[in-house]
Amino acid sequence: MQIKKRQRIFISASLIYPGGDIYFMKKSVTSREMSEIDRKAREEYGITQSFLMENAGRSVAEEVLADNYPTGSRKIALLCGKGNNGGDGFVAARYLTEKIPGELTVYITDRSSVKEGAALDNLKKILDMGISVKPFDKFIVADNSPTIVVDSIFGTGFKGDLRPEIRKVSEMVNNGPVKVYAVDVPSGLDATTGKAASGCFRADKTVTFGLAKKGFFLQDGPEVCGQVVVKDIGFPQSLLREYIS
Image 1 (cartoon, helix red, strand yellow):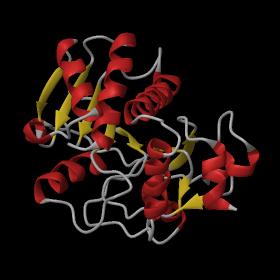
Image 2: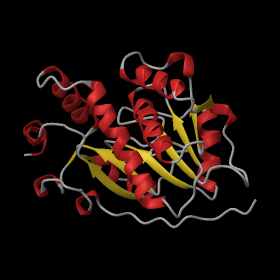
Image 3: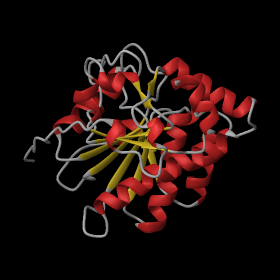
């Protein structure tokens, strides 16, 4: 198999904010601040995790479809973790399958431990739809393998090192002829400091939610995030303003 080196172009999140308030374009938050925003949205505004996850997953699918269809590649692999970031990937799989049935496979790091609530609910939905779901270690980059990969393993809470089995897959992805979409944050990147763990996924496009993360612009962030698109998934603007004023 011939390995194609992907060109890396970093575009600040301030340049791409579809439909968003210009006030938010140049703002970014730490992972702790984003976690607080998520918690307050649920506890103080009554916004459910399911609502946010549905919007997040749909926005990822929309980016993939807008960039690649109907003329682009028709084979997609979604690499999903067991938490809410993985849940976003499950939602994206639903929307993508509606447009390109039979051309998509979901690989889960730990299917038996998927987080209860919105993430597990959305896993059940894709299983009911008959979407192909396989163990994470079955993923491989080969001549007939997917040419689009959606990285939905870890989100803003990631710190430390990637496990060996995840690094093995990330090395195949990073060195393969595939286009990579990161969900919220490239897996392996510290969203606050911008430090990338060994084997961090290198995205061609990062689809992030609510606000950009400070780590996108620091240390390794610009190298692994690719183009950044900030999506509005339903966080109240009054809440976001509390953290970027």
